[in-house]
Length: 156
Ligand code: HEC
Image (tube, rainbow, N blue to C red; front, side, top):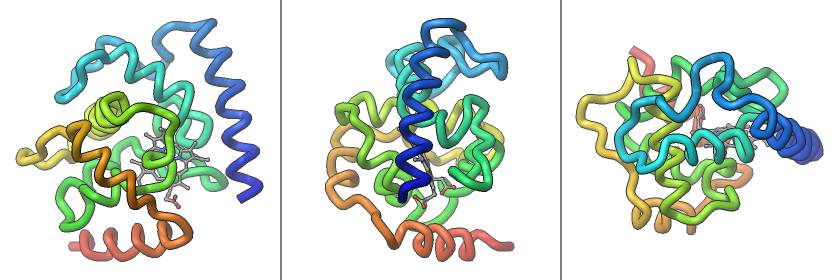
């Protein structure tokens, strides 16, 4: 928990600096990133920088001490029964200080930005209404176990 709080504080500090200083990050996440269910990609990218990248890193690769990699992996949840609701209820998403519409946009952006290659062709973008419902039941200490159970279903 303390580690997460520290990471969050570092995230906010670093993100504020990076939004000020740099524009699109060196890995290509930026306003031009194509995505479905994203009304304003620049806003999504900025919300990611401010709220998520301290743990998940600007390029979505995560880190052993902070958060799992989103890059090259996240799309797996779009194929697993229960994966869709998991992504809306995982603590970092559900408790983000963003309104429902911007959070739906951000989650859609993150999926297409970091793992377009593994997205289910049947995936429909999250909507504000769906996110409003999911985030009302955020995962807490059970997040890890829920994640593991879902990924076990994905094993070939
Ligand atoms: C304090 C660190 C932290 C922050 C900040 C954070 N996350 Fe996470 N995220 C995690 C951890 C840890 C997990 C794994 C599940 C769990 O234990 O909570 C996770 C899981 C996820 C997942 C599910 C992917 C998987 O492989 O389980 C998504 C999607 C996600 N985060 C997106 C976001 C978004 C979007 C934001 C910003 C709004 C965000 N996270 C902010 C730490 C963080």
